[in-house]
Structure formats: structure tokens, C-alpha cells
Length: 198
Image (cartoon, rainbow, N blue to C red; front, side, top):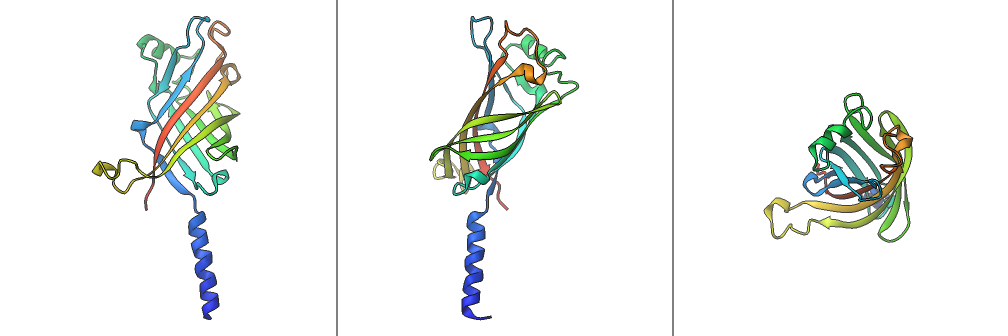
């Protein structure tokens, strides 16, 4: 094969590798999925989901091609108040017995700044799927900042993001106590992820 053809193939191969989106998995010890609501106009309590799984495909040079999918176990809801946790799992709220998971799958990414973007996707709660848009800040991608200090992180390539959105829970069939307990629910996500190797 002529040298020119070999060089062309090599360059194409390098470009393909450079453009490949890496797959990341959640560092669950450094990820939180929180939600908050207005209670009678008196306060803004919050809770979080403790058990979830998913993955991210992300290339910093082509963020618009990124994809993310997350599955949350409803039974893992935690507010710090056991009675409230139990109530949220019942049929008039999340109905955890019939609908044990919440699912989000992205449908598109739009870059809005050097470190910001919008991630559109489908959110499924209680069997109802509706579109939502997350406002996302890209915090970091690179060798883990603790790699030189803690052997646990040696060789770990990490990414970090912050995201938030507001939904109306009634659109997913959760109408109990609206409007005394707000229909609008703020969702905030802080996540650190590690690149999946191999």
C-alpha cells in the first residue's frame, strides 16, 4: 500500500479515536440527586434518592453528542424523617410498589457556554413519561485531582457536573396536597463520575 494511503488511514484512525465519547459511571459516594418543595409557605424541605445507577457518554470536544441515562430506585428516598419517607413511597405519592423506579434518558444536548449547556430528555415517573430540560454546568474533566495524593485515585480519569431543573409533579400524576405542598419541585444534581476503562 502506498505511503500516502497509509498516512491517510492512520490520520482517519486517530481522528476516530479523538472523537470517541468516553463512557463514565457514577461515583456514588460523591453524587447526590436532591429534590425540594415549598411546604405551606413556611419552609423548603428537601430529600434525596440514595440508590441509583446509570452512565454518561461524553467527549469534551463534542459535548452536543453526549448522552446520559439514569435509573433511580424509588424505595431509596430519604428525607431524614422516617415517617415522611414511608409516606412518599405510598400510592398517593411515588407508589413505589407499583412503580419501583424513576428513569431519565437524554434526547439531546445544547451547548450554551464554555462550561454550560442544556440536556433535554425524557423523565418517567409512575409510568408517565414527559420531556424535561436540565440546566447543566460542566465542572471538570481530567485525571482525578487526588491522583497524586491517594493511591485509590491513581489512574482515575474523572468528570464532574452540576445540574438542575424544576418540574410540576402533578404532570406525573402526583397531585396529593397541591397547592398546600407545592406543585413545583426543584431537582438538583451534583455528580462526580469515573471513566470506564477497557
